[in-house]
Each structure stands twice: as structure tokens, then as C-alpha cells.
Image (tube, rainbow, N blue to C red):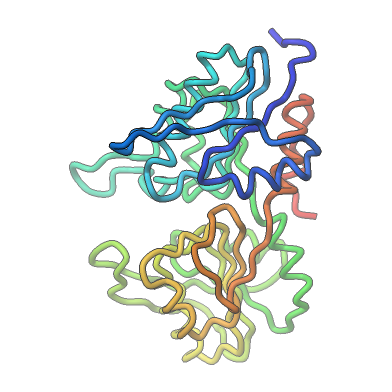
Length: 314
């Protein structure tokens, strides 16, 4: 049943208020009023300060560290359901725990599936996210998932650079599919950096597959965590004769010594989105806003319009 004239309301968790306000500005409406009561022991209680009964409720919250950002989103979904919202859509520009998409060793959790179950159990009607670490996570949900691609922002930026002798690179074999999509669209060669690890966040060995001598290289990835992979890859590409090395990555996790590694690396520029709030700045980092893209998708979903055009790189 479609509820005629159901109003739209956009709310935000505490972690993503910065992007929620920008999305609302593009949309042309005010951010919904909500607050969070925090108890002395750290327990918190989100609440809506305006009615959501019979409304399309969009809740914007990326689930980056700390984990309580995810818990806050779940509680906001639950609160909206109990307040008789018509539809509850979780807008998660960055979907945390996405690296846990399978059992790659014995006795581990498939964290991404667990998160999908929690969101569904909380009462979410739909998910909007961007550049999942693994595409198959969409299949973990029994509700619609709109998986957007930041390539609609990055491709125009790459074209604006006007680089000659351009090659597209993947920092590891796992990201080759994503990098290949850029290479095919831009009609450029693809280079793959193959890495092996002994433990998480620590590279044991890396080799380059392809020719980068005298080339301008753009590495494509979905996220930058400790920056160890991209910095090691950049050093090796430079040794192989690359002229200039840039990195394009959707989600700037940038944990640990990531900023220090980037500053001392061979990388000339890193282009990211504002899906995650930035705790520091760097002259090497360029930030592209996703607010316009998400605002447009929210508007189309609310008006029951196709969002196919948002998946096509212009």
C-alpha cells in the first residue's frame, strides 16, 4: 500500500550531521530535529523531537568507528518504527564492517551479514549506500539496497585533470574489477599491484603487473585505511618509472599513521569523498562532496522515480 501525501523527513545521527546538513541544503528542506540523551555510564538514548507518524523517514549515518555509530543508527531506526513512521530508509554513505563479507578463515564472524540482519530486524525499509567493499553484500539484505557509485564524481574529476599517458592501477588484485571499470570507460590500460599479507594491515610482499614507465598513474580503491597498501604501491610504481601517482578512494578511513605515511609518500594527490568525517587535513588530499548525489537519490526515491541515471557515468 502506498500512503498518499506522506511527508518526507530527514534526520541524522551525531556522526554524520555534517553531511546530513549539506544534503538537506541541496534538497531544500530543513534537517529534522532529534537529540541524544547520554547517561553517566556512557549509555545513550536517541529521540525524535518532532512527529514522524506516517512519514518517509530518511536517517543519515555512516557507520565508521567507533561502533556506537552503528548502534545509534539501529536505535534511531527502532525509535522511528515505534513512532509509526511509514517508511524508514537508512542512508549509509559508508557501510562499516563491509570487509567482513565472508569466512576467510575458521571461527570468524561474517560481520557484514550480521549488520544486515540487525538493520532489518530494527525495522529498516530500504538501504542507500555507496561503494561497498564487496558488491555481494547487497544480497545480504531482504529489503531494497540502492548501491551508488562515486565514479559519477571521480570520472569528471579525472577528465578535468587532462593527463597524458594515463594508466589506471589497482593497489591489489581484489580491487581489479573496480579499477578495470574505470580503465574501460576511459579507454586506458590497467595495471595491477599484487600484494600478499601475513597479518591484517601488514604487507609482506608486492609486485606490479603491467607497464607504468613514463606514465601518469591513477590508483583506484574503495577505501584508505592505514594507507600502507597505497603508499607501498606508489613507491614501487615510482621505482618502475611512473611520472606522477594519484589515488582515488571513496572512503577515507585514514586510521593509525595514515596521514604520516601519505605525507612522506610518492603520492602527489589523493581524491576522496566526505562519506567519513576527516579528523585531519593534508595538502595532498582533495575532498569531493557526495551531498548533491545523495540528495538527488533521496528525492527520486521519495517521488517513486527511477534512479538508473545515477548509476550512469556522464
